[in-house]
Image (tube, rainbow, N blue to C red; front, side, top):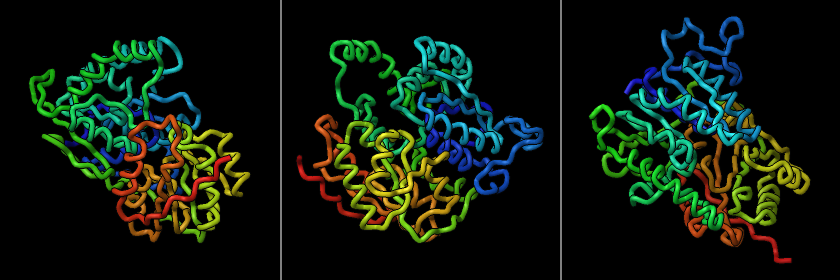
Length: 387
């Protein structure tokens, strides 16, 4: 379906916004000329609005629901500039940071949500997105990647399960259980929205599309479209390659899945083995952890201001990129097609997992690695000795 102003997209992370741009491009919104070193053209007069001469109307409307952490917000602002440069309308809507912020945002967005014929979401697990979905009357619902979580989303909707992030474990005691019970009707409504064929507010049967780089298979009447990062390849690069190896960081320590000492030891071993010189930090990695990594390995810590797919495509980038199981082992081979860059993935040793890691963590991480295409497999590094 061609994009139009009746298409409304909700994003909460830089990667989601990138994938919305990829989806729009795949549906016929052509890029408006190459970027110079990845920097978007500024409209005349320095305005942050789209150039009126470029298009009569925005290709789609994108609502950014930013998180509170500064790194994510900074990347989102850069991605919003790229989206505006494409001619899309971008609205920055605060929905966090205060007790009444979610309700104010819901009130501000409710009319547009009800009027949209196509709704694009980047995180079906987000409670705020699920709340917005209760208002949706759209004939088409699209899910774009928020990373490897798409794999779990497809699996859970196929089994008819409630939507729960793979690394989440139960907790919170009685207050947590009360909140879960109170939220259950919202979650159930959101799950029904993701069932193709259900009648919409207009009477038409709803279509559900998943736009993904992940190794997933659509079920039922759900449509799957492969995201091969065509927009990224059209707008950036090809990159200049360096002789060194780049490591890609992960937030598995921050989410409580991997033990910090095991992670540091693994990064140290990979640095020695592959002569790595740079470490591209995940936007959620803590400053304290990154300082410890730098001191222990001598790696240059890079905090990207854009998603890694764009940073790597823009260059310079190492001839080899080594990552732990994460989204980039699926996306970078698409984004870097034909550049000569080798992407390698290092397995997670089960001994690295913390006692609080969810029971699904081991199998999920193994699945991320096993299904990666066009990557080299590396064995897990030895865990540090106890004591």
